[in-house]
Image (tube, rainbow, N blue to C red):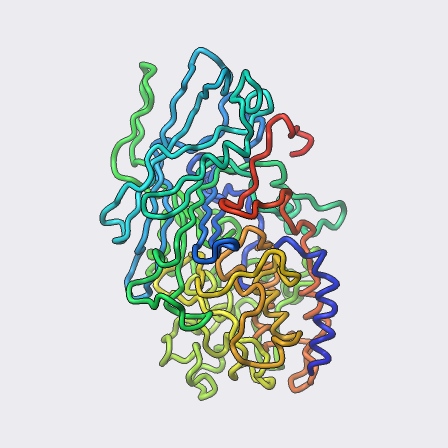
Length: 583
């Protein structure tokens, strides 16, 4: 068996350079960031992406990055992009499954002034127009009360060009200096950056939205977000601030359940906007209304259908617990239809390597509308597993006809517990329900769509030769295929256990990870192998498995290198360095 696993790992190592820069998910991976009809008309309040990871150079902290304002043209003057006034930008943290709702909320509000309204230039002679500052408030009682922890925080100006930034007729500095000067220490110990940045997401938008043409079948794939900027809110928070009440100061293991947090971001506006016919600014009044939110990448954009997208944006993750009408899109994801030869697999030739399990172990069908593992309901085989009604009720095995309730749905709505069957096939002896090698615990079942991160999991050094943008998929491959990880079923740190969907690092290729997951790679990792594997055969490394692992989208890394220190995002593209030909 080990030699066959080594065969798989050898192939994986050959393919890794092609996959670099990207196991749960179900979306069609394409974050143009214009997720819903209403928010597409309000870009200043539009969440684009959310990241949460243990800081690689400061592992006693967690870095959370919430990006807003999609597809900013670097040369988009004279009214350059900036955070909006009269908008509440919020980062929400849930750290206790026993308590409904957020425990910690960071609230950012922005103000801007024109220092020289006599010019049409954004920067001239050392002064700025659209000069933006912010106030940061923190709540540690679930939003009941807030404490101001940053006032007059600096937002760097847009990276217009060398005359505006570096010359004596501009600001007479460098953009790196402006960015570094904008990093602010909060009165409660957090580090904060709010400002322009290169959009860290990477994907072939043109190919993906052309009915799943990724990689492109006739032409070269290209990063649709290359040379675009966003506005980032980045905050670095000590782990002890994020711990739930009563959690040990030192984790009991690298999968300590007390160290799990859920993170989501939102933007809210006042309910009423009154326009004036006398040339006065609009007047905003009334209650605050959530208009955008984001947790797991790509959910609203490519999972939720058009008619439900605005509805989804209004919900909180906690509202999802009682609102089950959207669950079906996770139990039976649309994308799985195009990875199934019995349905519409032939309609998307780019996805030809991606095929879900219709007859895994000659017993289990995970095709849309099928039963998956539900046929085991009530069987002693499930006793003590996460699928046992006596453990989590019907949470993960709710009903027939919901095959992906066991793998895709929990990634978005509960996280994954370190219980059978959610352990690697290493040590299982061919039985997917047996004890295996632990490699994830980010279970937090009191909310819906959030990024869930176990803060106890060590950091994978970005210079580690095993570092991979494939996150937990790569961790699973290492745990199954290579010593010392595959030589024991004991818990041990495997590189990339700190990667998506255990949080999300800037480097993680969520597009590739999620498409592989829709095609069943998570099921395979726990021992529910592909259809071309015969149960009992000592070699689970089959053509279908290799096809899924070797699949790539054509765009697998960001267009700029990330910083190696906070706020980690790359500096924004300069307006004079980018042309429409680059876009």
